[in-house]
Image (cartoon, rainbow, N blue to C red):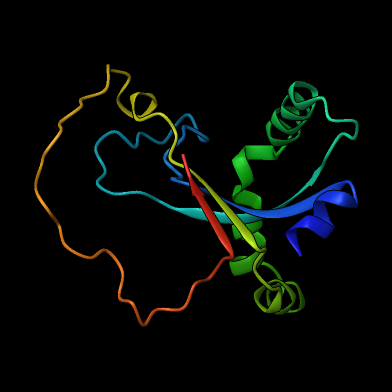
Length: 139
């Protein structure tokens, strides 16, 4: 399925972001705890010909064109008119989720704090859980 999408020249992914970017300048998020995670679908047009550099640049530019980092999708899905909400709620997930964790220094404006711990937290997911995506990429 993924291979067919790539061969067609475009691919649909779900993009997950932490939602803590400074979208509205008047709102100071530096004193809040947690993330405001958003997931929204994204159709990427892939360049053909095997030039991976050009493909990567094209994808980067397509993502940069998304207004307000995708917040509009959530507004439509949860606050839009009834027909729009119903349509977006019934839409299937993409096969691929790309979760960009972002840069934490953009939140505080300070250098990142890195703490490495060698402590087992145990199993992160129950083995009985079903997968929401065929492929999940976290970066």
